[in-house]
Image (cartoon, rainbow, N blue to C red; front, side, top):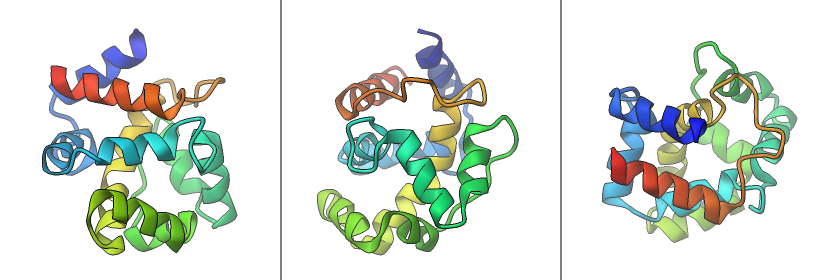
Length: 150
């Protein structure tokens, strides 16, 4: 359970006070559907092909260095809501926004503030797990469990 322990430690340790995992707790409190959106983005069975598929989309958009910084051990580079919309497409952001009950700009903004720290903590050794992060249901359950313990 090392991965889950590292995530819990990051939240319990107060990391991510400016967005990140601390921001995830606040975002989930105000809109619990954000867990499903994140699970859908990062889950192996998600529309975007999990972390590997998301990485490929960032690379195609010329932002491979950005997502690479989240997976790697260095500082996380920020991503804007507009850049995230460019990577995922306005249709995908629109679908996420509808699930969250917010407008697309708000959805992209929320995701852009949460994804860097979340991906960073889900890849604690500076590499994506060979089998991906699991399916969306597993990932959503893990994130929910994490937040209950935080």
